[in-house]
Amino acid sequence: MQLTHYITPDEIIVPLKGTTKDAVYKELVTHLSRENRIKDAGRLLKAILEREESASTFLPIGVAIPHARIPDVDDIVVAMGVTSHDIKDTAKDAAPLTANVFCLFFSPTEDKEFGRHLKLLARIAAVFSDTKLVPEIAKMDSAEDIFERLQVREREMSEE
Image 1 (cartoon, one colour):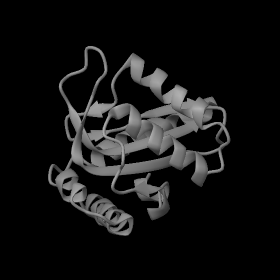
Image 2: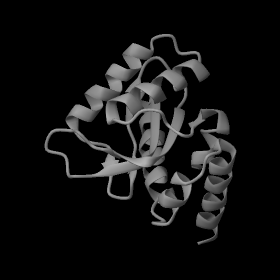
Image 3: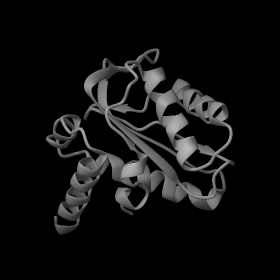
């Protein structure tokens, strides 16, 4: 599974306008909803926020992976946002983590799709396990450049 099979430069927002976790999530959901013609962005945002209440999706590598399974999609849909400013995790009982890269995605609720949901979570974490990648991408101001850098990283991973 490749992250870049699920995303194009059109689904990458750089720079994010939001300065808080909730604002970033709303921005990403609105963008993803518009790009994928999903009608109820409010319902998508609610699903993300409910998921975040159960456990934070911020990782210590500077990446957050907000995600949810919803009946509104037939396949996995992804939006990515990048900012040079640290966005703090505000979840109750959350570790003091920040993120510069947000990979928000939704997958279908059908049981047969849950394996791909978990694989995409693992793939995103693996792509960004290179500790130099988040700071590098956070300095970029072009969705095309970010996408190309992700492609290079995934090629590097396949050669490891």
